[in-house]
Every structure is written in C-alpha cells, then in structure tokens.
Length: 215
Ligand SMILES: C[S@@+](CC[C@H](N)C(=O)[O-])C[C@H]1O[C@@H](n2cnc3c(N)ncnc32)[C@H](O)[C@@H]1O
Image 1 (cartoon, helix red, strand yellow):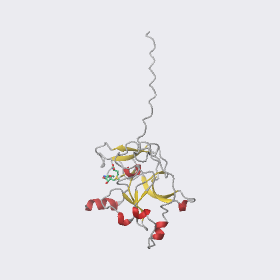
Image 2: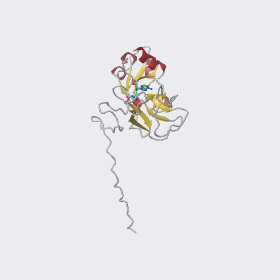
Image 3: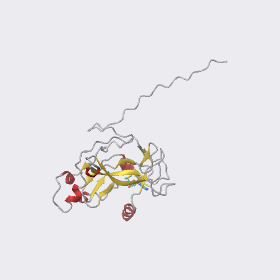
Image 4: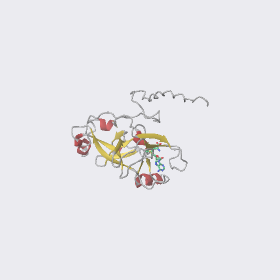
C-alpha cells in the first residue's frame, strides 16, 4: 500500500490590501472606479454649503439639517459592486450592486451618497440624480462622486425579475434625536428577504424611463 499522501496545507493567503482614495486615504470598495471620488458622507454643493438665505425655501432647507455632524461611513460589508456579464441583462457591460450577505426584509442596507445640490444646480444629463426632498428641491447626484449606492440598477427588463427588491426611502443620521439628524436617502430591503448573491434592483420610477425615451 503506498504511503498515505498528505495534501500540503494551503498557505494562508494574506488579505489583499484594500485600495484607498489617493487624497483622503479612505478604503475603497472592490471594483470602485478609480477615477471617481468615493464618498463617506454627502458632499454639499456651493449653494448648500453657504449660509441658508432667507427665502421662502429656507425652513424646508434648514429642516434637512445638512450641517449636522455625522460619522463617516465605510465601504459596506453588505454589498458588492460587480460587472454585469449576462448578455441578456439590460445593463450588460455596466456594473450592478449585489448582496454580499443575506439581507432581512425591511432592513436598511446603505445610504445613497453623492453631491447634495439645489434644484437650480441639477444636471439634466445625469442618470444618477435622485430627489432627496421635494419641498426644498434638494437632490443627490452620484454621477461624478458617490458610494456603492450609485450602482443600483432598475428591475425593468432584468431576466426573471418582475419587481424591485429594494427601495429608496429617507432616514436621519446623527443628531441628538432622530429628527435633528441629517437627511439621507437610504436604500432599504422591500418586503422579502434578499439572498446573498442576488442583485439589488430598485424602481427608478416611470418618469426616469419616460425622460430617457423622450431624448
Ligand atoms: C444609477 S446608474 C446604475 C449603475 C450603472 N449600471 C453603472 O454601471 O454605473 C443608471 C444607469 O444604469 C443603466 N440601467 C440601470 N438599470 C437598467 C435597466 N433596467 N435597463 C437598462 N439600463 C439600466 C442605465 O444606463 C442607467 O442610465
């Protein structure tokens, strides 16, 4: 009988060092596009960073508590940015956001970070701009900076998906009590648990696609 062969133990692979933002030193999530700033908190436009002018929109604007101190977020352990390799996926060749763990129904996943801007600063060509608060007109544009949230695709046309599994819903972050925290756009699991590996799919709303058809 030949002597029993013992498989050599695989050397423990050292964890790959996470890439970092060159300017801030912040860790970057895997597959983050190297040319885009990765945000750990919203970035305020020059209009929103200035003291609130005493206009009719001032109360609505100050209710957002944009200047409330908030802890910086880190790359989320709950999601992964992945390239879409399935040729039948309508966003084939682009990227999408996938569950890195099982995500329970109705749980918060991450915030949609980007440039917070006033209505008059909107870029009509951006596909990453979502309304934060209708009354003040403030919106979040993640076209040129943001976090993993900018990679959430719409469910329409995705094979086997007839409805979204996540939704956008605001929440408050920081502050002493909930109401005086900073207004954020959260991404939340809808009514069914999401299994690890599934793509997170939201509804951008009919208006988004009608606007694209009109172009
Ligand atoms: C907020 S981005 C989503 C992330 C994008 N896939 C990426 O890699 O940057 C929105 C863009 O993704 C694409 N997209 C998302 N969902 C889609 C869908 N259901 N059908 C076709 N294109 C979609 C469109 O190009 C859209 O303008």
